[in-house]
Image (cartoon, rainbow, N blue to C red; front, side, top):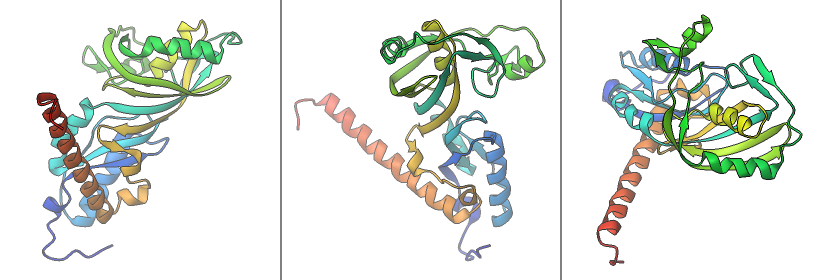
Length: 266
């Protein structure tokens, strides 16, 4: 365990936002608990830790983490656009719309071609209405819908508008296909896979999900290994990277706004 100089102030030096790559199998809140326990134990402090948008346990990818004052900035990541790659499987629908659920419907998919799939992807670009899955963190009558679903309770989730900035087919090897998409906050990628199957007169569910970007934080900017989450030095460096990204994004926004106001000036 490193020894920090007396001039080092844990509460001020390690407050901010950074990204980690959440591995498959871990809950987002479990990652938060690990980081909170390790940071506070190593630095002998009591700092709050939170995340900026959960990932399903079966998913991997970017998870924005806030420590101390950084928790206040997490709202920006909750509201920000996100980029994903997802692998879907044709022919089966599950109750969770992903690989963790039980199969509830299945049918053939021999009629599904690459051209047909690409054709239907256009229906999912732009503003769309989407009904979140029953197994989700949506609150229904004050209760998380996944909790109600596990208890077998009947409830209804209202559809809502989401925005898909871009969506494209990466690979098509039946029964599997892979998509890449950039979506607004609150968009359920597994639901897009599920609904795509329905539109093509078959079924589909997500078997792999990888979040590649949350707001300004890309996968390559994140701490990749769990051992790095436990190291305050690694976290501080990751926070510095995030600060540089935020500064660069602000400078780009200023330039974009200037060009809108004065389009003829070069």
